[in-house]
Amino acid sequence: MNKIKKIKRYLHSYTNIHGKTYIVTGANSGLGFSLTKHLLYLGAHVIMACRNLNKANQAKNKLLIDYPHASLSILKYDQADFESINHFVEKIQSDHIYFDGLILNAGIFHPKKKMKTRNGFPMTIGTNYVGIFYLLKKLKDTGILDMNKDRRIIFVGSLACNKVKVKQIRDILRGKTSYAIKEYAWSKTLLGSLSFELSRHDKDSILYVQNHIKVFMMHPGVTSTHIVSSSESSYPNWFSKLAQRVLNVFVHSPDFASLGMIKLLYDQNMKEHHMLVPRGLFHISGYPKEVLYPKSFTRMHLSLIKISHEVIMENLKND
Image (cartoon, rainbow, N blue to C red; front, side):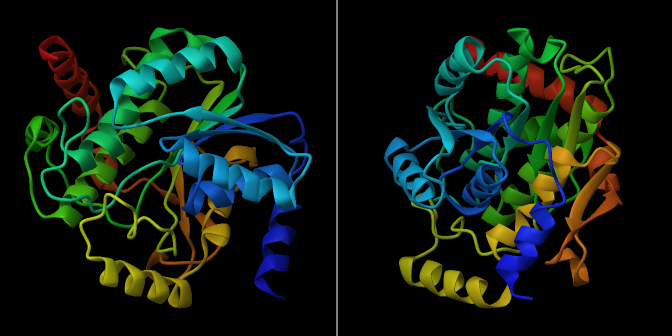
């Protein structure tokens, strides 16, 4: 059976999707584009939350070739800019408040040295973690996450996670630097811990979400997305092209890797204290399977929320 048939057979195991609305951040390429394609195939309405509107429209037009009757919207969303996130949440509140799922896919891997977000955070940490924390806090503050509405929030992690000690959190958020891959690993570890904290539904947390909002995390293993060759990447052009070719040959495709997100959106038996990883060797590729959250995600969740909120509030006061 070829790969396309395998993917469609997997998708056909999920029903009752028509009419549901999903927000996919970073939907114009990579995993986000593949997930959007799967959701359209299943009959859902997708809101493409993208930083670059030109690329988003190009992706939309490409999708409409295969799905001419698809229900697709585009919203401007820059995860490295609090003001952009504010406007995005305003649009969600006014036009799409009854969305069924939020897939937090957008991220950055290896930006140029000393790049910062619009609000002065290191680009990798600021985009992959701080921006998502700020988005969720805004959705909470506006009451969207307090509505009596079943939803699912999906965090997209990474195979690259690094043990982060509690005492490091404040320094990392305030600008502590390291080599690029370690900073990426930090950002994904913090993100995993944030996902775990929300999934506990702790009423004392400032990001408390009620039990009818299910919170999950997955990591796609190693897949041939364009994250290595993005315009912000510090890799030289020749290396980016070579890396992309190697990835295309030796790892599973974004279409296959994104199946884990489909499972998290629709599987009614999925446990919140579990996450999804590829079932293949070293979790590099394969169909998704459930595993427990790693200890690197669960040991610091209580301190993380408090410190993150304090650092972001300090930033806003000084801005």
